[in-house]
Image 1 (cartoon, rainbow, N blue to C red):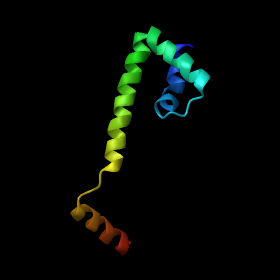
Image 2 (spheres, helix red, strand yellow):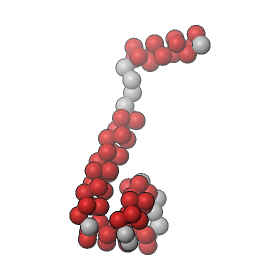
Image 3 (tube, rainbow, N blue to C red):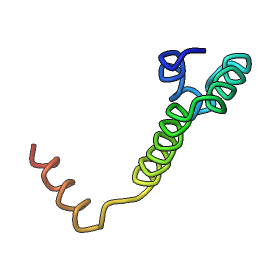
Image 4 (cartoon, rainbow, N blue to C red):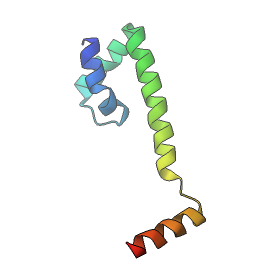
Length: 73
């Protein structure tokens, strides 16, 4: 697997949507390639942070203000 291939498959790998044979090849590539491994670590950390943000809720005041704005639209 090339670095270009690794970058193309990285998001599917992180989300668990990669076929097992490609996943194994990608994992082997990460073990051998420090640059791609570091990119994987950074990308997966960012995915966790984004996931955490998506699970958080806006403060009640903001939700109310948005609801009022939408009701008036």
